[in-house]
Amino acid sequence: MPSGWVLPKLLKALGLEGDKASIIKFEFNPKDGIDNPALSLAEDMDGEAVGEPRFYLLSKGSTETFGFCLHEELGCRGHVIRQVELGGLAQRRGLQDGDRLLQVNGHFVDHMEHHRVVQKIKASGNQVLLAVLDGDSYEAAKALGRDLSQMLPADIRPRLCHITRDKSGFGFSVSGPEGVKGTFQLSVRQDGPAERAGVPSGSWLLELNGHSVRSCSHTQLARKLKQSGSKVTLLVASGPVEEFYRLRGLQATAALADTSWLPFKARELHMMKGAAGYGFLLKEDDYGSGAVGQFLWDIDAGLPAEQAGMKEGDRVLAVNGESIEGLDHQETVLRIRAHKEQVTLLVIDPASDAFYRSIGLSPLLFLDDGNPALGSFTPSLPSPSDSPGLCHIDVGPKGPGSWLMAAANSITITQSPCREEQRRLRHAF
Image (cartoon, rainbow, N blue to C red):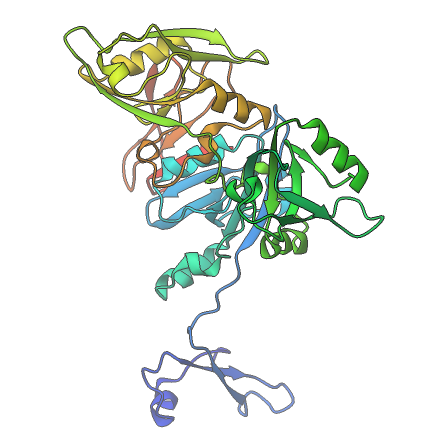
């Protein structure tokens, strides 16, 4: 009789037949012999052992990849970590094949459509914080009807706050242990600029104007604050959030932040074409550090663009829910013309754009989950200068599969044998 085998008759004799709250296991003691096993009753309210989520902060160079693929597989629930590159960043940090992705930068994603999760990781740039659960634990939790979001901390995001000083200053003071660098706690004046900007009293200072303060002395920090002029941007963390990162040896950065208190927002413009068109000019131009963007100019008074709230100098981030980052001018024009009578643009004004550039992050990273513009977000097709992207679809259980290879200006479908007996969507990072 195999170890761990549960006898139906014994269950009935003990009055536990059909009782899922109890697990009966045989533990065989070699000294007593196989015919005299030691019986142990293990109470388990869940009926299954469910592991704990694991957190990984991945930071890569601009020419590197994170070293894993994210799959959506038929017959396999969740967003699945696959093809973890041997010796790559993801493997070195501890990601494993079959892990299920639960969070991206503190946002719960298990319930999201696959392309939206891909977009969140892409928008995160060179750093991303992932929360994963091993495949067996994920399936066990799903089978038990568990709410996976309840297995994660309620809020692990630091807060990004932009403060404009008044006559009395920024409205906060800094304290810390004498002679200790990088440990600064904030006291916030009631109804002062800092409190109005969302800085919680008692929070810990992590970054000042996009730069870590970990190596700063109190004197150096005071000098940096003075040099900030009339405006300052702080990355701060409450006690529980600071403890979360410290205990795991992780560094909280602005890429992981809650930006709901910032005055800098992307805007969604929905327009129906009039008899004279939309009433704007799209122009390609540089916007710093060699980057090229698509800008809105020559907005005609009284036409749909002006009525929707378009401003001259706005930069286009997305067209009809699709990011245009990496696309050239002609490709963007084709996206706008794809729907002949209407278009939805996600745009950002010059001041907000400059702010996100100053902290080195894409504004797409901070779109709220409830933002209508994000509801149908999909990754843009790669431009010729980008690293190639690949979307692979295998159609099973019988017959050939198809490789869907998207280039910037064409889509080619070729036939290839199915690698697995399942349908799969995947994206490499």
